[in-house]
Image (cartoon, rainbow, N blue to C red; front, top):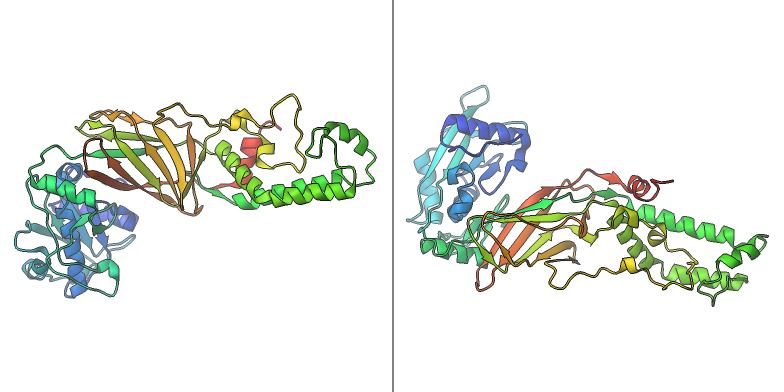
Length: 440
């Protein structure tokens, strides 16, 4: 269900649309401009602290970013969840709640509004809407004025801390975000960077990869043992085909040599499996790219780091590069003595100054973009033939993506975060058959 965000969320009609959206998708509705609480006791300290935290984060947004939804307003919905509206007890007086919030917000905090929709058969419960005003250039930073320590540390507030809205929560501001708010307080100065980052292609989800690779390697070992039994009458003819094996150009004639070959192969198996996994996924999964748009602002020599949390990144391979022997390393690899022992296709040489670099960093996949510039309102797009991305948790329906941007000649750091829906889950057997057995 898509929510229309080109309206001002002050009337009952707009608020009912928001409520319907929350009922349809629940917590997934949460964004930088919308937060959902299924239940909240507004007479308790923790309940009041949660509302204060939302309002502080909403007040510390950047005007241009905020204006793209709800005309800059932000909405906290209390008493709704996916599939139902449990509501909260009717009768929360706006002035009483404001009095409880004021110690956290401070005397200069901008005004906020309330909306109410009755729910249930009786008249004793309602859904409450807390609506924050659009942020404006020239406004100061709004710090928290009172600390609160709850049982859940996520509810804590620190006196003097600056809170901002993330993708679906309110959190302490990072250095770059504080600097952007300083610029807002100065009346804008040089326009802060307003970046829109979008993922092109899909993040793969593949089940049973390790299991399938293990079965393929077991099969290779079984086949080697069958082919090289000492009583095989065809062994002599096979030896000609293995003349360039690792055993000095001749096949393993004795049981001891066969055992040595197998032991050596087994000892290197973890490395071979890791390389085979990269080739398998690089061939089987579609490539991923990144599109970047800088709204109304030229960005000189940007350095953009995009992190796909809980993901892996691999070199993208064309379909015609699929090679079974690069997925499963043979116990005995045959080499043509007239050809080099390595495959030139394995070399990934990028041009000097190529603006896309990717790597695995811990449990995350990281892509670094360094183009010459981002021009105002013009999409800069990387190709989709560089890398593929795989979600480490095959059951995860979405992936969290964060980005950090710095600009040549500026100390400011701009950050962003969003979620990307992952591709449909595919079984590794099906992926292998599609990529490597399609012509058989």
